[in-house]
Amino acid sequence: MSRGGVSLGVDVGTGSARAGLFDEKGKLLGSASNPIQMWKDKDCVEQSSTDIWHAVCAAVRSACSLANVAPEDVAGLGFTATCSLVAVGVDGSPVSVSSNGDSKRDILVWMDHRSVDQAERISSQGSPVLQFYGGGVSPEMQAPKLLWVKENMQESWSMVWRWMDLSNWLTYRATGDDTRSLSHMEQWRASDSSDIEPCGRDEVFWAQIGLGDLYEGSRAKIGHSVAFPGYPLGSGLTPTSAKASKSVLLLIYNGTV
Image (cartoon, rainbow, N blue to C red; front, side, top):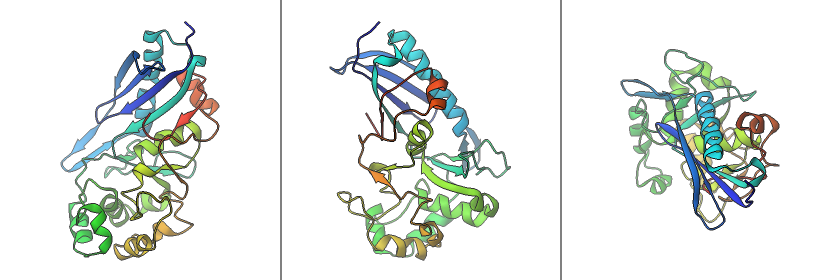
């Protein structure tokens, strides 16, 4: 059925990936979900980006089928996801963050609490940057998670090409564009939210907490190029991504739809 102007939203939660298709008036045309795997061991909670991508593609295919929407009718796609942390290797492959070395487990889930000690140490620094974190950091934030990996998994730490919030990883996986959403960079930088350029306090803060090496190479590992939510990324889906989802989408949007 040809209708044009359809928007596709993908939401990756803690337990499933959901896809919804909407017309130009915001009416839901169809939706579908697919479960995602999660591994729990005491305070450690991990997921696999490979598994999540497969779940996203399955949900998109099902939603398009249920809504009877042709791929060429989809004008834009937006991603949103939990604030989980993804470790990406130089060739885009997963880097293990699992204590058992499982190469598939490359995501520290938002509710992973292995970095309680690191969070307490960072909060005790008394840095003025902490005002942007409510006065202190939680083990559910990225800084303590990163510090835990650096202190406990040196091999993985050295193998990581990019550290990404899950939502940013999804746009990267879909388009090949490493640009980060400003809405997800507030955990990484102390900049005023109205300015996409980092302020000088950032580098001092990351060095103070033992993560100054993340600022090497123009902050490439944690995001050098930043865009406002809704900004189109790259040239749309890569051929590999389009084939995986059996869609030919025209634009990919960074962040929420």
